[in-house]
Image (cartoon, rainbow, N blue to C red; front, side, top):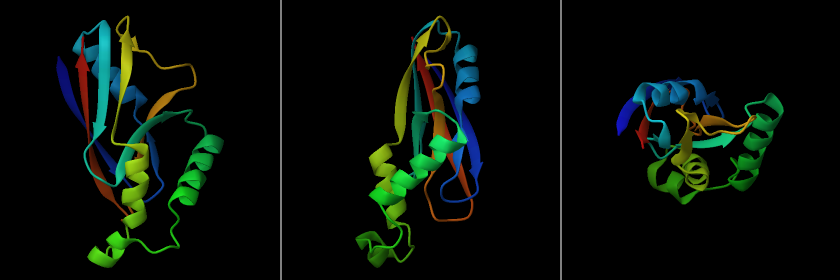
Length: 137
């Protein structure tokens, strides 16, 4: 088993960060040839997923999340805490904080157009995110 931490500075709601090169580096450093790479973001207002890291589909994803949890409705969380990020929590819960990717022949088993991304969903203008990568095999 191999474990590493990736720190990511984000700059506002809607930012999408391609983590693929850093996760691939973790897999290479692990020496694991066959197994799984688990990627987990700590925090309840960020998420990780896979997507084609292309401007059009990134815009489509952001728009879809805005439809699912719009900014212009009230959230019970906002009423309780007054921080205005109820939608951030809902969006993060829907996408999820983790994913597992197969390690095949010492490399990530992603498809040709499939990248691992961090979604910054918090309304704050800046966050430092901690992403844990665990490679087992």
